[in-house]
Image 1: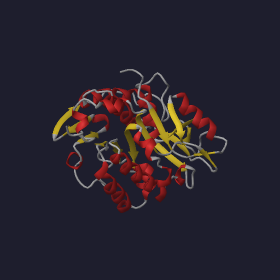
Image 2: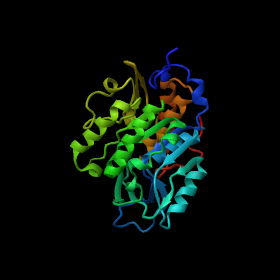
Image 3: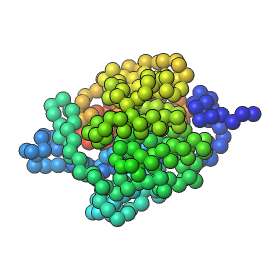
Length: 313
């Protein structure tokens, strides 16, 4: 009998060997300290402190859906570091591969306009997570997962983090682990669009589930998402999403939302979707759930909503 490839497992029951793996979803990336204001930074006097990072946000959403999750990162031993790790553990995320190391954690500030649109100010250059490298990728640990989530933002924070992302994807493919990838293109973070396109292109041969947002990611994708992989879900924000599976397209409408803050909504979507697919739900049903989770997140400030948000199925 032929062993199913990672892509073919998405349309068939998961093999028994998957149930013995320690984690459903492992994510590689950076999480920063978040300071959130309800007005422009120049006039803001009060901030709420939290945390956020695209892959970590998705892991929180997946964990709240019951998935077994783990985070691969590097955490600075500054005054924020131990609190960050404790908060992630409190969400049920394994942090055994997100150690405290000498250095500082990235910090970002959010201000909002009346429509809930974000304005970000970052202080992340040289952060501990930016020191990630291919040497941080533990093959046995990656092999203990059913799926790994990778991001274009992780690729962008440093050459070493980009190399770590590619190493993780290669390792996952070697061990039959699904690779999910959100290009999450941020022009200001990259600076060079050509570099972002190259980083995306080098990862795509290893990707099983592509999770782009359009039109934001169109500039770096080398073609239509459904032409690049067998399983793609294209997020269109308030217009919902379209699920592509082996050339078949299903449109899943958005859920009406009260928008307070758009930060992290797409990340919550990713986590809820992957958790649902990994527990055996059909992709269209998983997308409908993810739409509900993302809509619920929009009603709350910051990247991570209150714990009760997104816990339902």
